[in-house]
Amino acid sequence: MNHLAHFALAGDDACLIVGGFLGDYVKGRLQCQLPDSIERGVRLHRAIDRFTDNHPVTKRSSRRLPNRFHRYGGIITDVVYDHLLALNWARFYATPLKDFSSRALDILLDSRDYLPPNALRTATRMHELNALVGYQEQAFIERSLVYLSTRLKRDNPLDEAAAEVVEHLDAISEDLDEFYPELRLFCDEWRESN
Image (tube, rainbow, N blue to C red; front, top):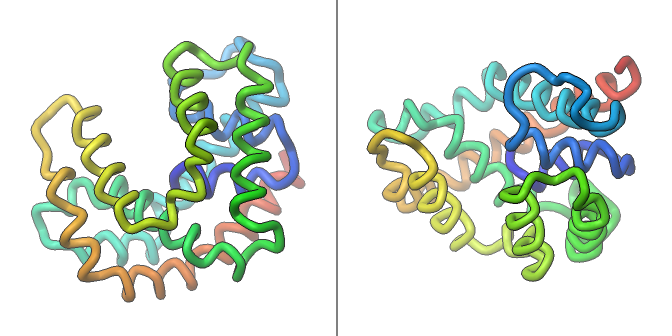
């Protein structure tokens, strides 16, 4: 899952939102570099990623794409699932997406002291654009995949994947309808026990 899902799955806990964002920036063992409450959010982020990566429905979504994209299926599926979550937001959450986006991104900037420079730049840019609302646009898929293609060290076809994804959006949307309630339940249980 991408930023939108990580923020939403944090519930109302601001520290889990910050940790969910930092999960993409903090690598390796957590060694008390952050407050415990934010490190808990990083751990939730990692638990979400493990659950998602190993779930048969997300694997099915990845297999819907042509073979040349299978190696990157997890990355592509994360982006597409966030797009579809944004499109179907009102089915899962009562708070309008625009309001949720503003609140989550305000929380990130209010926690700027805990964000490394590259994370702060991203959070600031997202805040200026109220970016999570933009996830509803189909162009979000292409922009995200092109950007992610530049972050990988080896040559990859991510910048060409958006056109293939569009052909499979309806089927992947059905996958998300099946998967997301299970992921929400997993996160609810994780927050209670951790």
